[in-house]
Length: 316
Image (tube, rainbow, N blue to C red; front, side, top):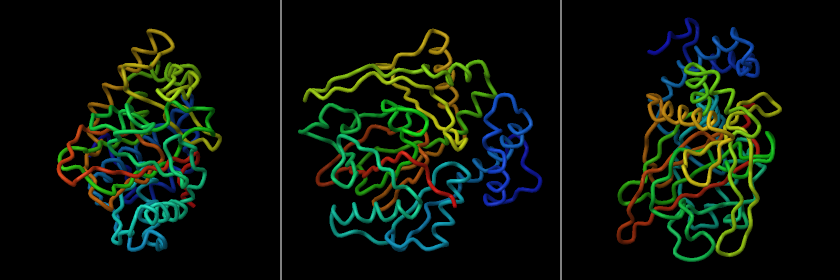
């Protein structure tokens, strides 16, 4: 067990109850006492959570109280939870309906208006051979580096991607694994290692994604913002990509801070690695994640469904 365990905290629920009382203060760089208490519980919970298998969900359209409590307990500890549906929808339309009903059970309602989403706000993450998704890395078999979703679409602390579901409809024949890392843990590691670097990445203009125009002529303006910031509730949010191209850091010092952060993320022993099977998924407060390259063979085609939200999971 790392960095000393809380002497009176033996489960997620108790740890969350304690953490909730000091979360906003814990992320203040001027409140060392709150930070140290929060840090102790966080490390304990993050390590304990690695062994938790996906939570079985009997019917995603009617999540039971015990199923909801189990997922919320995990989200409280690590900002994400893994689940496994025991029932399967009959077609894509039914899958969309099930996803929307499932996410509503956790208070996720403010859906992002994504250009590749269908009328229900659902994006199919799969290899695209035609249409507006062609050429974008998520719709290829290529590796995707560490990132949080929507880093290029930040419009203030309460108008950005803060929640997400990523559901596996079909797994790849080979590859397509994900690594997951609670963004609060990335913040913790950087604050431990180099507080000056953390301050640089909290600057309002720390990271800019340049303007872009795709092949269909759609224009996206330059998007600047911090890497770490707090929303109005005091929750810590992260906006980040490890991509080397099409990212502009505020200055050389900020670029160096970002490189230090990436090194810590890559070395993190509490990151979780998994390959989701059909019916399994990730419910999260937009945590860090990546994807390995994959291969589709025969009739097996990797397909994941994603919905992004501008609010976080409701733990009440």
